[in-house]
Length: 136
Image 1 (cartoon, one colour):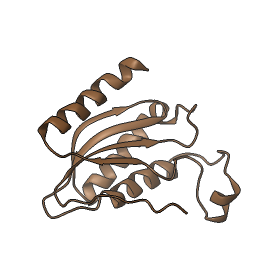
Image 2 (cartoon, helix red, strand yellow):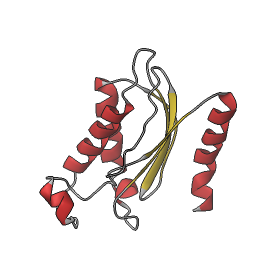
Image 3 (cartoon, rainbow, N blue to C red):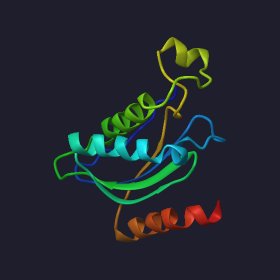
């Protein structure tokens, strides 16, 4: 199994790309209120600032800034993904490996994370978020 290395910086700002397992799906935009509720649920329990976000039919790009003493973005994504998934009816195709682990087949297991290094890095990623829907 691949050993994923994540960078954790307390109070850091991060760029994320999170994808659905079915890249042809429209679940995120078709269920935008459920996704909003999942974000509200996570933020109420573990606050973070959403600096920029774009929700496309099958993936999300976002920039978050965590509180100064906090570095656990992984737990927040787990809450968001779980809350969203539980709000959807079952019926998606599930691989045997997911079934063996008791997982649903909605989200890709992994996500892209990039720790923003400085203002220029932040601006470049915010621009990417703003222009990503245009290039779709």
